[in-house]
Image (cartoon, rainbow, N blue to C red; front, side, top):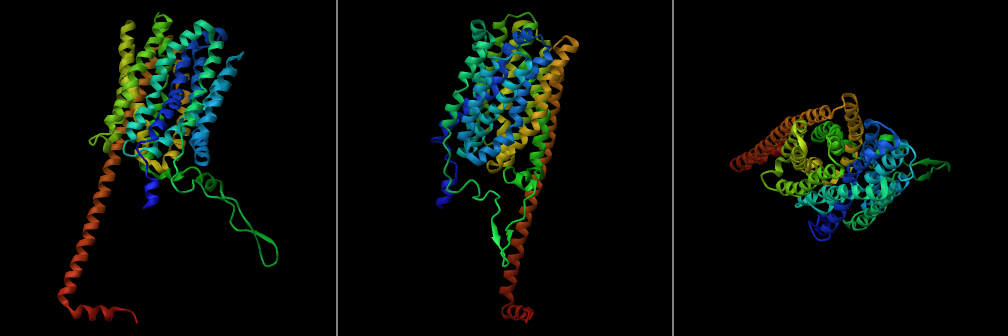
Length: 472
């Protein structure tokens, strides 16, 4: 009983401090690649590159952030969340300071995209994992509050970046942003590990101990592990036999193809429509302001008794509604039309982000969540990497942003409908399986009761017959 109480999540206490730390690290992880778009126009002119080439900066950063998920999962399982997040904050800071000295667009790909993206990966995944260890009953609320860090930081960073750019240029701004990213190290220091009373990993970690035979020669006590077995020590590959996980993975890969492109190109699109820099930045701020309240609100909604058992349907609706907003964006005229789009986009974007990892934890459970996040992010890195550059290529090809929004909207609606249909099928299969198990249990109990009643009625005859049937 004591061990069970130690391993149960506290659902409060220091957990709320951990949520605040996750709020900071998740806020930088998701908001930073989008906030950098405020510098894209100037960097594009400085290096003489196209829309597609400049889009690779945020695209590589996001893709590496997702691709680094398995590496981050292994490090979290090995060392815990705190040192991994602190290391990620240092990497992000170094990447931005180094990027301020870039002389070509390739240098930005390397510094911001690869080094910075890997640092953000070390911030994101450990923060999500440790929330699942501290919370169970209030987990949707805790996830919603932590994920609200993204809109809060985006709402702050968008006008701040515009101010820094006017005062210091993009190079000086990058150095200042590098110093700001050191706050991720402070956030990581708040993530105190839970003492669950048991070791996180085996002592030997696959090491093979030698042993002498009678003739004095040494033999191995274990056969060499295969590569798959070695990977399975850190990543739960049995998830690929989990029907709900496969449905979630396919739907999210479709969604991620066009999830970030509208956000990345919103400010350049506003400038293309003749708006000034501050008006373009205010669109991101309006989006982030609505997103800020949508995430915890969605967490409260998802925690209700009527929604939580079927939370996957709410996730499917949010993705579909997201796609509808993108399809209607080209119809928006003038600044206030784009403000309406930004507000609607902020609502559904916040809903998707608040439910993104909560739905994954609902599918696989907290114990397998760390491995599930690592596997999901490695598969999502390809659509995340290709989505924004393809969207930028459409802008270069047609000279108009409308086709980019149409493509993103169509892909998002397809992903939402796929998840809705397949989750309905998955829920039906689970209900039928549970119903069959309940019927089987009732049948066994009924047969046992019938057997006992027949034994009571037959008296000694039943005993003698059972004795005769026993083997000699």
